[in-house]
Length: 294
Image (tube, rainbow, N blue to C red; front, side):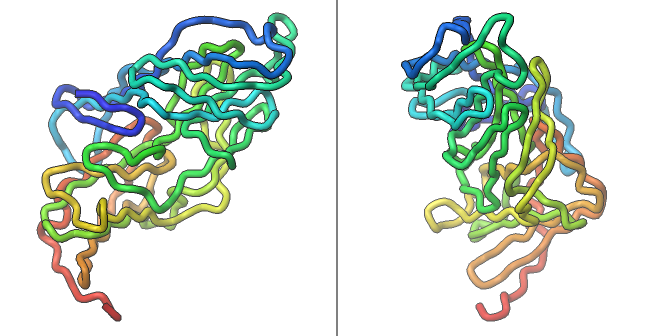
């Protein structure tokens, strides 16, 4: 099975994560001097990543992604304002169409500071200063069974032409519940770590994303069951967080309508970029207590 950037699927095979964006074409930046339609060929940067979990020991799996028709990316030329590019196909290899104004340089004149940047998902508040991008990962994260919620798993690309390879910025902790009446789940680090918020991410040409700083950090991730109902007991749901080591472990809190219970893991947890950890049925042996005030 496979997933798109909005739909994630997991197959029993090998614990790895793949982002399938695609590539073709190699237009040069120096051919554009005024606003006009441009095609970006978005390609996969990391086909297969070995992943080990420090929360659960579970069977081998493969996680794959692809684009959905309607997916959008932000495209920057150096430190210019971002432009929206959209694909109209559902495929692992996608072309994104949009407009960039006043793209100059190229060839021998093109420098690191004037390279082309791409950021998924599109967000009008995402910025680029020519050497890094600043994006926001929300702490309130949508829930979708066996996938990320729409527009939740950020990736970036950097290129000197219109062929762009996207690299994931974040990691993920997925969970599965055993109680059929869980309506909300929260995740926090036991050492007050920033899991989400606004972050500056750098990436050299030919390199991979690296977190430079986090501002307006969020200490807790919150996920409410889809449609105001309850989480399905036989499905995984995916939290997305910035890569880091949770030095004192983590806490998952499970909420019913008027009760809650917390699972504490007191050992260090490393959340790697483009890595997936699992917390399966950690609510099964917990004692739920009433929530003060209802």
